[in-house]
Image (cartoon, rainbow, N blue to C red; front, side, top):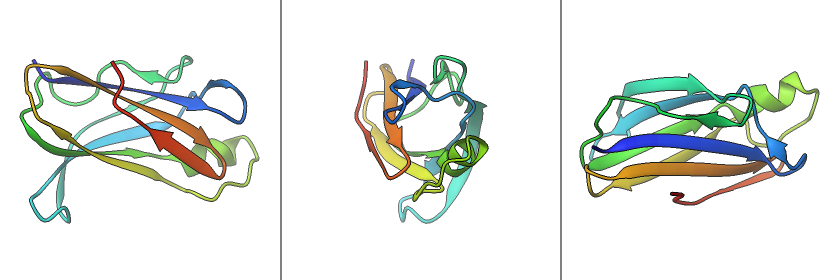
Length: 113
């Protein structure tokens, strides 16, 4: 079944980023509208082990990471208040993992395993 997990690492500290709110939304064909499918908060290891429904069908999805709140809680000035990652599920039978490498002034992401 198509399941989803995520992981956030704070590269400025070299540690997992705990306490970040993550929201999963579906993306309509125009990319403008969305439907909330699930949410979670990164744990002590920076992970949300499962987010959203038990099965994600093929289509486009959006993960929103509340990076501003994370840095603000640590007293760190940051440039990006939110990190948004839009991705496509092509095969609803696979597991998808979306890691984010985060620092106060940049981020990167990739399809993990």
